Length: 406
Image 1 (cartoon, one colour):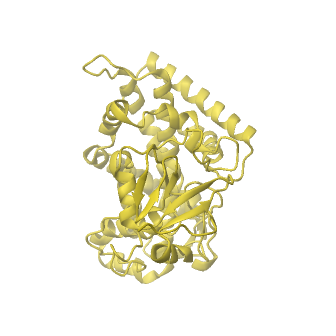
Image 2 (cartoon, rainbow, N blue to C red; image 1 turned 135 degrees about the horizontal axis):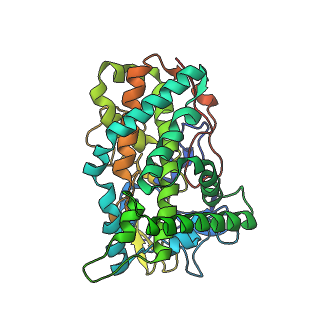
Image 3 (cartoon, rainbow, N blue to C red; image 1 turned 90 degrees about the vertical axis):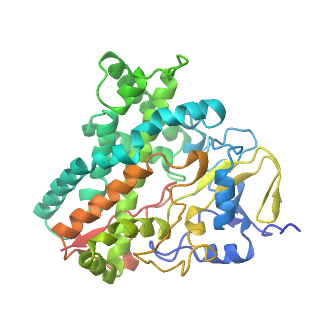
């Protein structure tokens, strides 16, 4: 028998009492209404999934569209288009079928565990340099400004061969495309147009003088059947990687350090046993209380999820944050256990659209912790954990600043 929906749609996204606490609704929804109606910032309605098995089911199913371009799909943001999930950037990157199966390996071969591990010495050197600058600046200092933001920008700029000096420009463009409530449609359109023009010019420059970077390689790549990426695919691929490669990782670096310092016994334990850095990173990813809006899917056919039958045309939001605290999958799910094993969290998604950059994100997070533990063992939050402020309105969650001293 199908469960009925919550009678009144909940406002989404929802937040915890503090920036590091999960929304109280997550636990209630998992127990009583795991397939719930929610109202998005756009005013459109969607269905929210909060249980681990349900989220994994939908994300693993290749039939469901990752782009919300159908007329009856819900818009996420409160502008006319609905934000980043409805832009040309989302539409022109192949999302399904043979074209997606062709595109993903072409890009994914640059993000293998082996390739990303080879970047570790360079990432470590940059982290050391940024810590030097933060120390010279003096405490208290904002870890986000001095380390969490510039490090992933430097890394992704190197991978794509774009000038790091332009980081403020594409940071603004990314913010406009990822924000759910702050920008007007005109501002979003302007940011999208400027971002596309910037990346198109970069692709042209790379075509004339290919470099030893990802975009240069994609321009030159030819499949056995003679297929090459189109100009539009190259531009949108570069744009999406630039957004994902700095915004999400910068936010996660800040949240990881904040989580570890919020209860300083965690930091002390890593100091005593640095081998726990890797599982600690996985646990921070799992227990993240504000991972963002979640992953949307458009159901192209009638589907049963969590004992509820959803009609074709339903827009579903998969909450990885809520799923990662499901007691049915994780013992003591609300506890941060630095040595949790196994840890099959869904922070990077799962299935055909699992995050391409997960190996890179892991290397950056692990390296930052290694450097901070070695260089600044006395590191601590410069404000009470409950006074940390979240970034409001972003499709990906983060902290406005991470004040620290040492």
